[in-house]
Amino acid sequence: MAGRLKGTAVDVLSLTLQGSITPAEHVAEVLEVIEAKEPQVHAYITVEDRERLEKRAKEVDGRIRAGERLRLAGLLVAVKDNISTSFLPTTAGSRILKGYVPPFNATVVDRILREGGIVIGKTNMDEFGMGSTTELSGYGPTKNPWDLERVPGGSSGGSAAALAYGGADVALGSDTGGSARLPAAYTATYGLKPTYGLVSRYGLIPYANSLEQISPMARSVEDLWLLLDVIAGHDPRDATSLRDWRDMLDRVNVTSSRVCVPRELIDGADEPVRRSILHVLYRLEAQGVEVDYDVSLPSLRWALPVYYTIALAEAASNLARYDGKLYPLQYKAPTYSESVSLTRSLGFGWEVKRRILLGVMVLSEGYRDDYYLAATKGRRLIRDDVLKLASRCVLAGAVSPTLPPRLGERISDPVRLYALDVYTVVANLAGVPSLALPIGLYGGLPIGMQLMGPPGGERSLLSLGLIVEQLSGLRGVMAP
Ligand code: GLN
Image (tube, rainbow, N blue to C red; front, side, top):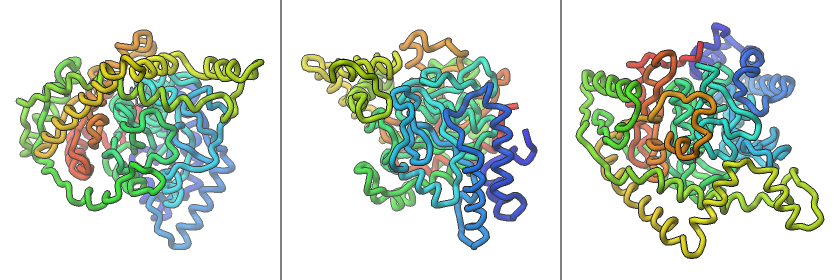
């Protein structure tokens, strides 16, 4: 690893603004790392062309010299491949979108470019975000840079792996049920699922609209804040985007000196994970943080079935648009309906097909009340319970019940795969912010911890996150 690349995005930013490094030099350095690591890791589906990157770096340099104050001046941003870019293909990890170049940028991408960020490439992911390991990509799996026989988590595994090996300064993921946080936990990186509505979803290829948020990923708490601050804010193009977001962020200030550990967010986690989290909590207590271990939110036991029912129902509706006519991949057949079904059956992977079938089932006449409606009621109970507790303390728990699984270990059995999300889906169902951050290594494998707050509580989470980051010493860390 080139010495200068160790560290955080804010380090790179200050070197750039001091003039110690130019954006073009930084691009060259990071491309060298990508060339060395990509053959084993495969974090990217598409890496931006060298000449175009050099051109963009010169432009940014010109803007810096002209005195423009750019919040991301020359930083290299890895963008998950379900976030639309008009200058690079956007596949959402699916063969059905092979060759698709959107006619517009996602709002978050425009905001990043405006602030001098450079999109270095589009990262690998489970097809349409449906998975927890990045093995379900239509373009081959991503490996965990900490151990190439293990998964980096998913579905934003490409973004996490790129950060973990130094192939980007910051990254965008998306999080429908844990997709930014699980990969963060498995790669010793940081991921923040924002409050629902804080970040525009315009240009995000949808999986389950009522649950998901585009999410910043990084190698430090400070870097997360830097990127969040650029991408957050009202967007008239997204009807669910919050209007009073600034006020909300300023108003909500849950005292980060009180932490609650609901049993349901840690019980059932493997021993190394549980022990590491408790160890951090004891150390926080030693620093004067009050920790309450005697808390229970019984409704969280239903989080996983409630989440999967709602997510699959929304997914089935969203994926109806891929009819083999609107997008480049089209298989010809004698009739219209044969061509639609041929394109869909060859274009979608098996997990996506499974989810479409289940999603259609839970919404169909005769089943809707027992499944979809029951799940929406369950969601309400979970949300009420989480909001009540989050108004008085930060919720802490595990991100994943296990250490990073080996490749192939989980995908053969969907129930074992879905079980990895047991602690993360809660924040999506409740619409609250959740931060995943590294707390240690066990046998060379990363372990993460999750902090959840009330809607708009991002600042409290990040300030508590800073203390945890100091305790762990895992700021700016990369895989060896
Ligand atoms: N693993 C979960 C799922 O497959 C969450 C994925 C995500 O957040 N996109 O639905």
